[in-house]
Length: 313
Image 1: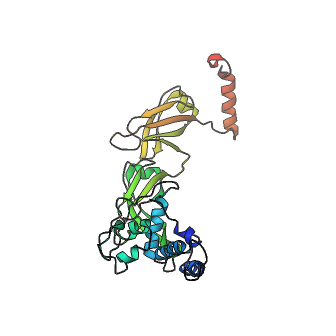
Image 2: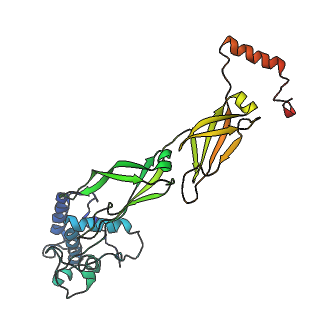
């Protein structure tokens, strides 16, 4: 079945107001009305114009049509989606069989019981579209869980047929163990249904806030931990913050910058918890006092160490 672009038929933009649609319809009606037009295809064009007006001048039909148009791809054979239900009374604003005869099969399939005659004045019903959005959380939220309130901009159509954004505030629970890229599904928080149909769902894609301390790969977490030269050289037990709190860490003697320690199961929790990889970073104290410079001079004279020689000797 051929998809009909009603906006193109009326020569208006998809953001056209009800008044703009009415104005364009009147202009085209004067041009193509069979009683006055000399155009060879005037009758067919007038039927197309009437059909387009019947849809775009009704806010509910227009919203349903717009949702279908978003799913259609140029060049495809169009078929109504399987959840497009036309089996209930439509507030007295349906179309009689005689009315449907004046319009195309495309129109009848969408707004007149799939083109099947003899069912009287009916309407249509459609589940609302699912909506998708991104939400940014702290890495610590994935370790402990959290409650959040978010505000989304939701498109709404007003009585004049204009689409405007309205704020919609939602409360949600961030589950413990969630990973970046996973989705939280909020049932019924998507686009409203058409003709009494159920609303769609809202899917929130999880992203972690940027944090220079951590790098996340799946459930594994990587972080750098600064240590002093003597902790690295002699070994030490230190405490360091990690996303889940504070951990005691044993620094092996003779460690160098870049040495990696694995803390099994201390990554993002889950059915198979990730690991925490700690990368040591040796940090030199500044030589900004006489005492500090004296200590560095002592090491320079007493330690036979040249890092540019093989083996450091």
